[in-house]
Length: 168
View 1 (cartoon, rainbow, N blue to C red):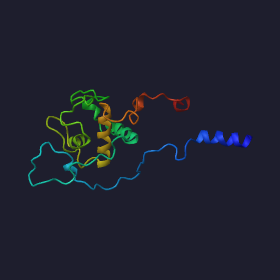
View 2 (view 1 turned 90 degrees about the vertical axis):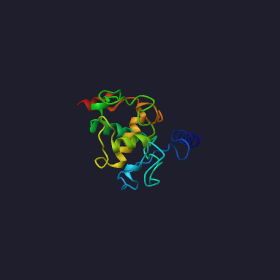
View 3 (view 1 turned 45 degrees about the vertical axis):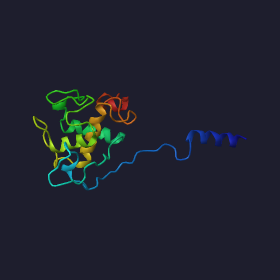
């Protein structure tokens, strides 16, 4: 009888078979398979015909790890220098608004980071790996609430509380 109760308790602690599904993380980025400069377009008419890679899906969309990495790249690449520490704007436009000037879809944000924009946004294409640009795009979308709330951190990393061991 005790064995049955203990077995039921262990089964309750472990949960259903398969348990919690974790998102997949790759430790090494695959080489770029898409054309960097063809992520999104502003109009339907394109010289030379249809561009390859248009309409691609962001590999970082809705993934908590990608959003947190994007937050780290936002700080490391000094995006906060123009867009504000929390994306509220400064010299550059705010990233917290519902509609961004050149589009709020992941492809549009990717395109803006890669190509740059007039009046101040530098081109980062060729300087930042494609995977990091997608992570930055996911983080920028999270600033305006366009990414799932369960994948978006409630606070930035520097606002997390430190344990006694971390403070030593």
